[in-house]
Length: 224
Image (cartoon, rainbow, N blue to C red):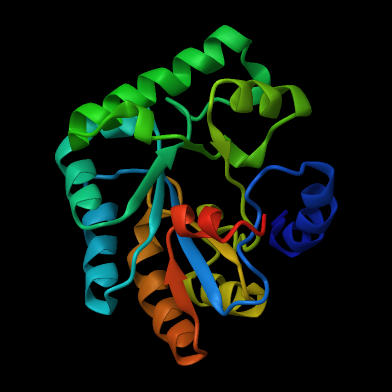
């Protein structure tokens, strides 16, 4: 069963219940964020970068530590091209299933992998998106006490189940509005189609007058 039709409803329920997460940008501005989870991937991410370069737009990537260690040069390329990077855990384990110590180690290991690959200060890598969007009040409390910024989403076309490019594009365009945070995947699940889907989504949204911002820029808007 595909859950894509339920995500907009879930978003409306969870957003007020968990304040302090970045769920959207400023709803009064025609700006959005395009984000990608589960990478970097040796094939999918470079193909995606070609699309982003062609349209000259920034994106935000939430990486798994294990994938960064497999493809450090690709991670470095993503960062050097001006895209924003954040944490998605070390190996996609659900955060609520981890102890405080295990979660902190997962994030620290991922920070270290990104910092090494991209040659940046690990303290600058503070944005965290939980795998599958699963979290609890306790999880969020830990993240904030450790100095991390929790980032969620508002447009989830469920591309990881590979419903087809046309369906991913249709769902994304139908759900996107001012301030939307779109999540696609350039990892092992859904990543095979990510470049093609992005190449169809981006020009349509540009035609509608949307400006693409990074997650950092959405935080700066202060409307979460």
